[in-house]
Length: 95
Figure 1 (cartoon, rainbow, N blue to C red):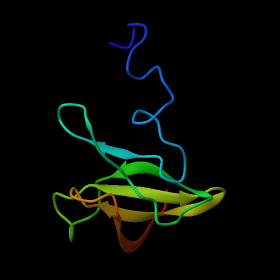
Figure 2: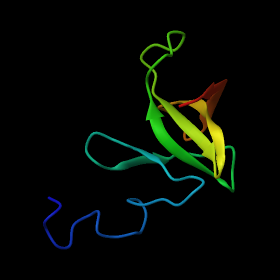
Figure 3: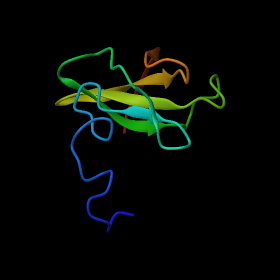
Figure 4: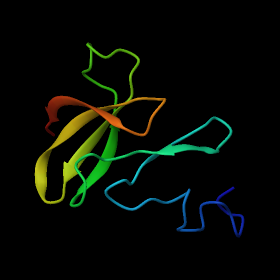
């Protein structure tokens, strides 16, 4: 798929590429865009990574880490599968 030219990831246009701070999206199983995630921390921050570990109070929930450019730690937010708004947990994740 990635060797084909052009392919759907060869374009820097939505829905395949999103810039900070809202730089992540949720896709349906068929590859269509469900929604672009909304980063509540806004300008100067980014959605850094998926987080699934050390969340016993949130089983079967996908988390994302939101960081601020040039600062640690990253904040843990939960992904609501029905809406682009992230759910704050108030937890820091340190490396």
